[in-house]
Length: 151
Image (cartoon, rainbow, N blue to C red):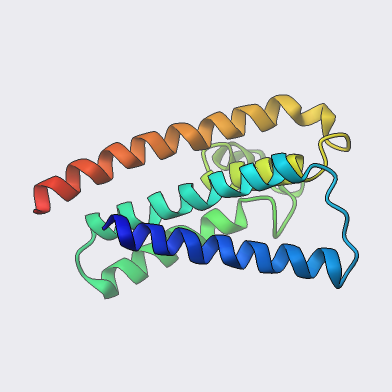
């Protein structure tokens, strides 16, 4: 399993590097904080892999896995503050977004891109980073336990 996770990580990282190179050299995008942004992006890749493989270990059938991931992903995506701004949504949706991992990934990447611009939300950045790291640890423990039981 470690090899599969590592391959997934490398592919996601390669895609990130290609997009970043295109952004810089084709569209002249400047990256104000490249180290912070790249580290933040790597954390989001690791989190996404933990979520995907954790769900894959829990759900045995591919059809069930696909349906479950879409059922969870679409609401998470809509509440991630990337499609529709959360400030335009009802208060109950904003509360649900606070437990949405995609919202925290968006927040981390947005602040990491330009810390000066979002300096008023630096506290939210560190909360989101801690939230994601905590979920990585919990998911890693869960995946490890389930993986050992299946062997």
